[in-house]
Length: 354
Ligand code: HEC
Ligand SMILES: [Cu+2]
Image 1 (cartoon, helix red, strand yellow):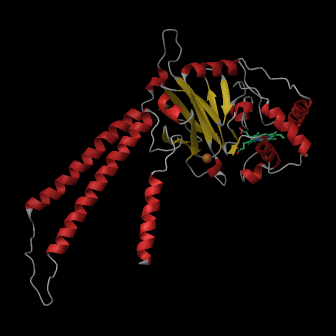
Image 2: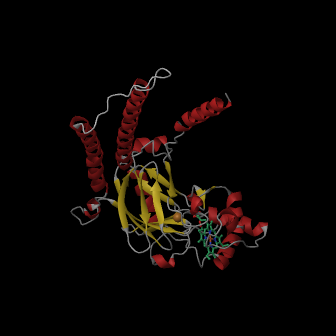
Image 3: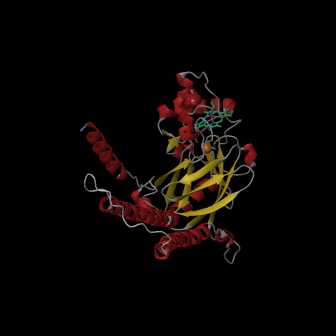
């Protein structure tokens, strides 16, 4: 009786969990062309596997029931068959057919999803037709460089919806993996060679997800691997263009309050050696050793994981090592509450404006 209760409750939990899929995070709720194709393959292979299991279990049950010893003392042995060509033919051909049904679409999709030739397409003025983003993975943060637009940003990736976005993927320290579960992937970011792929974000699905998808590092890379998150703001093309313009015309905002001014001074003493506060890609990648904070005021998270609040910003600056163990900022610092307030206020004022 107890065992049955346990079994039933497990079953119920499993059923409830199958309904757990957030549109901004779930592979089961594909939000674009790539994710849909990958999801279809998932369904196809699961379908074939379930079919095989069901048929085998049915045959097994039939044999079990039909040929079991029915009465005590019965010792009839069923007819023994050896070398039946018909049976051998059937159990060879069926798996071959099933494997073909699985292999052909999988291979075709693998080549299609790996085809990044669209990256090279240019219009008549020689401008690239598609958006290209260089993704650089670092312990434990992400950088997104738009080489054709001259922009760099960190943690929040901004992309236009309803078009293919091509990614060049690389890592600067150890191997990581770039994954936006709802949109597709994942693909490794290696240290010594670039990987390429593309994703596409449906505008309708982006609306459902609040225009914000979650991204993850999918390769165990160190103690804070699980905190190596990023966000993808997928917005209509017009909105994306406005963002680009704001980033390209970026001017450092002068602090408007005395507190923010004080924050700026502390920042220029203690932080600017690692963090840039302009969003252009003029410094070479290997000199960009910390997240770019130019547009920090428009972030959705602090350090990729904490909700974006002033308290969390202060917490991070005081003890980044508590929040992401092993991260490369510093473990902890002794700022007074006043200094932390000043730094947070200054950082929150950093925004690209139109
Ligand atoms: C030794 C270089 C270094 C110094 C100095 C440094 N940081 Fe950082 N900072 C980093 C690195 C590396 C990260 C990324 C950590 C991670 O997410 O794993 C980071 C992350 C951050 C973040 C989160 C960024 C984001 O995109 O959400 C903030 C905010 C920040 N630092 C503020 C500061 C402030 C303020 C100071 C000065 C008091 C400072 N940092 C000094 C290296 C540095
Ligand atoms: Cu990682």
